[in-house]
Image (cartoon, rainbow, N blue to C red; front, side, top):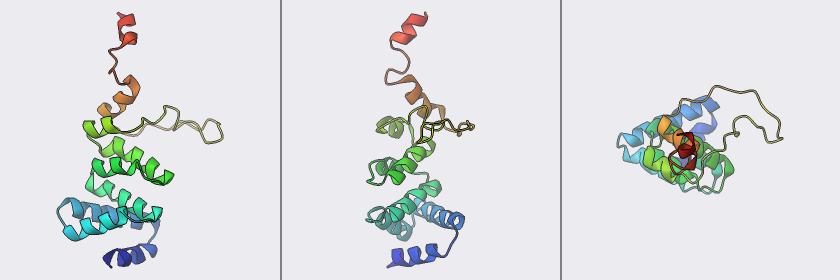
Length: 149
C-alpha cells in the first residue's frame, strides 16, 4: 500500500521534484531503512516500466551499481539505456566488467536519423569504467600494443 501512496504523491510533483523524492528514497534505503528498501523492491518488480524507472532513478541516491547492472536486462529500452549510463557512474570495476555491452563510441554524437549532433563535453566517468570499452578485453596489451614498440 505504501507504494501506491508514493506513486500518487509523485504524480502531483514536477519531474525534478519526483527525481529528488526517489533519490531521497534511495538514500534512505542505503542507510538501512527497511520500509524504503521494500518500496523500491516493489517498484523494481512492477510490470510498469515507469515504476521500474523510478526505482532505477533511486540509484542516484543509493549509489548502488548492482541495481543499475540488474536493470540492463529490463524489457524496457528506456530503463536499459538509463541503467547503462548509471553503471558508468556508480558501478565498481567488477560491475563494469560484467556490463553486457559497452556503449558505442558514436552513441552521443549520432542521432537516430544518422545525422551528427553537436558534440558535448564527456561526462565525468571514472577512468577504469571507460578504459575497458576503449582498450577492449585485453586491456591494450594485444597485437596493437606490440606493433607500437
